Length: 171
Image: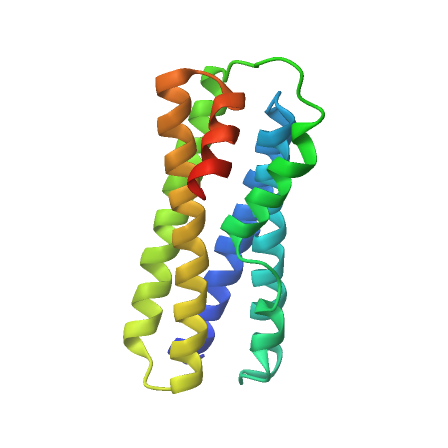
């Protein structure tokens, strides 16, 4: 098994763990925005998993760009806010479990970025470099959204205020 194959197999495990975590976090989160945010991240990780499995099946890069044609994570969060805004009538406080879920998500995204950065540094193939750079960008965006959400909720304690800030500030 070559280094690239090993990297893809490890990446598959990272993405599977991410899917599992974000689905569970969504189930445990009380606020509609939080639920949809975590589910959106799970969908991103599923898309990454699909790409990785396809690459592993033939160990080459077909047209992976087609998997990245949909909205980036930050754009999806703005859409989610608009969808749930009408459902929200009162402010709902973030609980300690939600804050911890955000912290765990940040740790997972950080580890994913580190792993993909290492894989990027080991390859000379331009297609592989472009692929790993795109994954790094998406995982960094997840990290930033989780970090900003967690920081804001720690200060205000309220999901509703974060939604308004995210929409007005652009995330």
